[in-house]
Length: 112
Length: 112
Image (tube, rainbow over all chains, first blue to last red; front, side, top):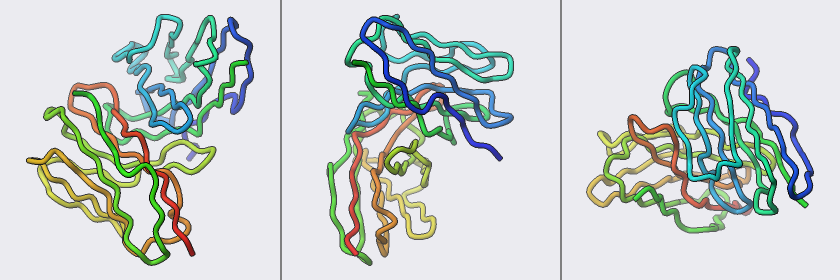
């Protein structure tokens, strides 16, 4: 069985640009969450989507947005990129609530 | 109150020894405490998890000890092996929450 797949694996963007990160959950998983992991720190919660609706949002500015599609895949969008947005962005899926989340390998975003 | 504090930041253990990582929390509503293992370039992988109705859970060489009154929990890795060298994160969540709150991580090195 395929795990959580994220694309792209690496990305370099310039300050002020926007970026779209993509996530395909494990088949049958309806919940997708996004986390930001800055180097040397633990992951920080950004969003959770369940059945295509936003169910939770972390302490991130409005430049961050996300959506979930009918096939339960998800996109994370970040506008007006800042140097501080450089991080590993992780997607995690679960069949229902927060327990038992499976993480993807992440997208490494570098903002220059 | 949403913080989970993890220690130590880094740990070096000889092969065959016991690795111990500690976490403390403040939010008494937390009812799910997982530990994740992360290798470089990969997303966190669930190792073992515990709920506060038990004081200990063991899976193979990995044991979680939970002290509800002290609001602390720890991961013990018995017979530590070089392949256990990774970064370990404790986390916490509660029913109704849509997110995991992660500790800051412990970089574990097992010397052969």
